[in-house]
Length: 474
Image (cartoon, rainbow, N blue to C red; front, side, top):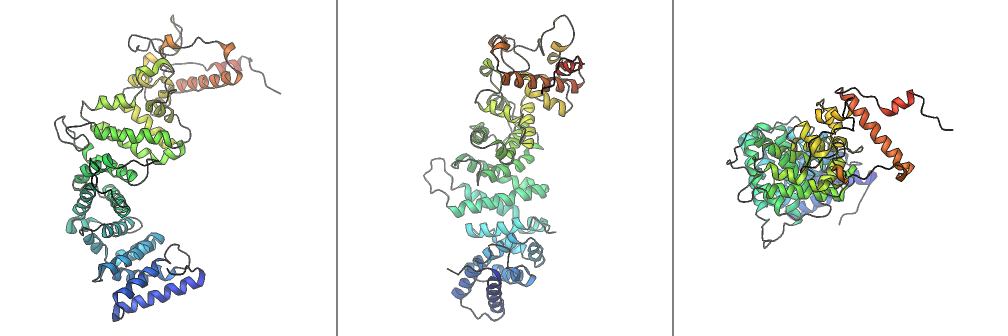
């Protein structure tokens, strides 16, 4: 193993190795084992940017590119490609240098090889040049069958995932190659939507892998995260094509049209039990967005299945919604998360869409306490039944006194709890801390209602201040 160097010694050693490799391109004075050994040694020095200057110059990129794509030896090509991929990763300016040499075409051609190492290295290189370059992948799509190569490689991966588990499990390099291919697929489907119809052909294989792959703990790690991200973009193809219940769709395969939905929901449930809200903000938002997109184009008989799995059930209404440990309750709590704004918005949107985008159904399903913020920020009208209780009239009562009942039993529209199961309010039984929390909750609810402009109400806290019923504490 090569000695680890740093500082000036490292830069001198890199220069020495690159000079030998550059000369070899012209004179062919190295035997294949010698050439491969030099490239393997060079790779050990390409781990950090510092003191790696010779690698980041046009000549350095050219030397590595020629050894990667012009060599007659696949072993040499792969050793050089490992060095080149690390260079492109460490220094973004080298990516346009690589593009200017015209080698992306050869990288795309290598994807046609049925070899996981070639797939890993060349998809990584192509993925890296989707950033910080002016390269247009259209030529690779139109003339070098890039989309077809990606599809075929994913199909090959899917064959390693059998339902019985009798086949050999994917090796680490299999998983790494799959992850790199999925990353490239995600970017290409994002930047080149006109090729989505071809790229979407691999959706059945991706869904097969996701259904059959072992879910590690924690669950949101490669390849699961990349599988979800790829499906998120590919779903756009089906989102633009309204389907009849009888139309084939890989997201709802026969004979089990719920299998993929159930897998998505299982991963979501697992993740919500494992990660903190801060972690969920970046990790689980794509999965929630995928569920939203899939619900949008789901067949009519599949939608109730998703609603049952993700919305609070009537059995949860024995207490205020959001207080149990079910998946629906955890989603409700996330819809009010102060530390995960993107996830909060995505979860609230999911719950609203599961309620058929109807404000009254939304309030009925999740309670006004969880619905009010979303309705206000999206300028959606508060259902009349949710405000009658606070308007001045004969009925008096609290918010939403006349909201539709559940199973013939009246519910509290703010909390979603069945009225007859609410504990009798007793201020004497509340601690000072509980009184403060309850006052704060009511204050927020009044302010949200007032901001909607639907009814004219005065916050009781505000009114108490005006009437001089508050005392300053020393």
